[in-house]
Image 1 (cartoon, helix red, strand yellow):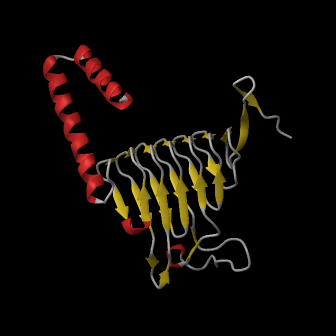
Image 2: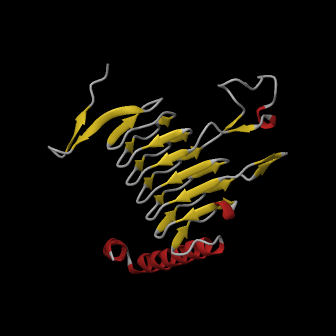
Length: 223
């Protein structure tokens, strides 16, 4: 109901601000855009969802989504089941109310789980793997072309509920992001982030913690 009210308010604003002809064609374009996104989501098996123009979804057998999902234009969501001679058992789970802006990129060979009511800005990248291994016992050699290096995952990416990820954030597993987290634009998340904090930077670290007594975000003193 809230979504319908918001859309009606947007239409009212367009009608109030534009000449009738402009308002009419914008309304027709908006309706066409919504229908196209609904059809695109239906074609990949996502009921009650919206998938923006120019998006690619690969490995749909390994991807589950909740209701009220909306993904903007030019998304690339891929569960990689095989790469060359390598075989994987990937899993991508997007919770109810997931909402992402344009150019979302999610890639999994292991597991990426994003829980309910998360909001992602534009240009967000989430992956549970790398081209090659750069830690642990076996390392990739720099003389080997990156495209020829095996895909390696050191663990899953788990993102809790009610998380807001800002524009151009990069998240590479293994990582757990708690509930209620805000990740500032352009951050790079490579380590776990506890619940109810605002994080930012490269690499991302907690900057503020929500105080449930005062209902305010308190600065975290850095050591």
